[in-house]
Length: 93
View (cartoon, rainbow, N blue to C red):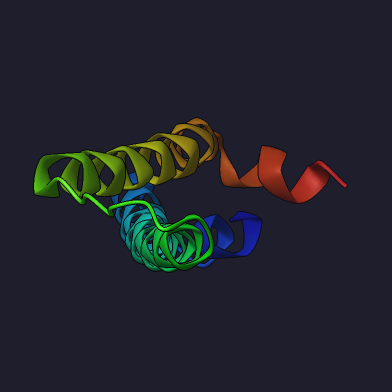
């Protein structure tokens, strides 16, 4: 972040970059979690002979929570860093 700020990126540019990155990580995490959950449910179904029920609403809710958590955890630090002055960022280390 320090390098981006010292190269002339605006606070909005840095925030947008981190927002996109955090949303993509949330999307990949949500998809991976959904795949692992469905595979685990089918494994339990084969072992215990229980019916498998996948309500679409719960899958979508889990995916949206993963994206929201990724968004918040990525945007908060980026917003904090985007407000700092480039000189302070370079002097930090």
